[in-house]
Length: 337
Figure (cartoon, rainbow, N blue to C red):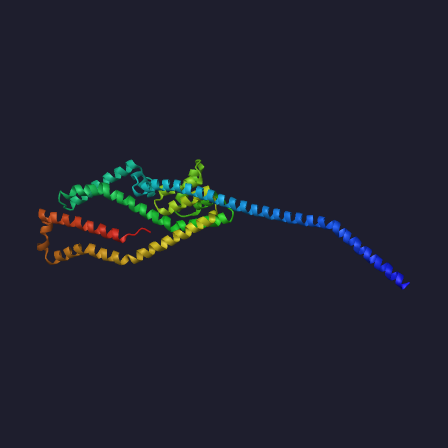
C-alpha cells in the first residue's frame, strides 16, 4: 500500500513537472515578446520625454531671444527719442526754459519784462555815476543777462525740488502696484497727493492720458518739462515694461534705489569739492579785497584806475581775465554724477 502510494505520488509529481515544462516551453516565447515590447515602450516614453524637454528648452530659448530682440529694438527707439530730448535739454528754446522753470509768463510778456529790466539797470548805473561806456553793457546785462539768469535760477531750483521728492513718489507707486492698483491709478495718486513740482509733472501724465496718449508715451515726455536724467530714466523704465513685460514694481523699486544712490554720490562729491570751492572763492575775492584795503590806506594811489581811460582799460582787461579764471575753476569743480 505504501509502495503504491509512493509510486502514484511520484507519477503525479512527474506529471506536474512535465506539464509545467510544456507550459513554460509554450509561454516562454510569449513572455519574452512581452518583455521586449515593454522595453520598447519604455524607450519610446523616454525618447518622447527627452523630445518634450528639448522642445521646451528650445521654446524657452526662442522666447528669450525674441524678448531680448524686442528689448533691443525698444532701447534703440528710446535712445533716438532720448537724443532728441537731450538736445532740447542742453539747448532748449526760451519757451521751453520758461516752461521748465514752472513759470506761466508768455514770451511777449517776458520780452517786455526784459526791456524794462534793462532800462532800469541802465538808469541805476547812470545815477550811480558810471561812465558812458559802461551804460550799453548795463543795458545788455539788464535786458538779456539778468532775466535769463532768473529763469535759469528758477529752473535749477525746481529741478532740485523734484529730485528731492521723486524717489519717495516712486516708492509710493511701487507699494500701490504691489497692493494691486493699476499703474494709472498709482500715478493719479501721486498727482493728487505729492508736493510740488512732482505733483505737476505727474498731473501732466494724467492730462496726456485723458487726451488719448498712452502712459509710456506721456512718461517719456516728462524729460521735456523736467530737464534731468532721472525723469528720463522713469520714462524709459515705463516704456520698456510696456513693450517687453516684466515686474513693474521691481523695476521701479530698482530705479528708486538707483536715484537715492545717485543723490548720495552727488552729496559725497559736493562734500569732497568744498575745499576747492572755498579756495576758489578766496582767490576770486582776493583782488577786490586788496583793492579795497589799498583804497583805505592810499586812496590817491588807486584812484587813477577809476578816473582815467587807461585805468578803465586795465579794469576791463582784469575783469575779463578774472571771468575766464572763474569759469575754468567752476568747470574743474563741477562733476556730473
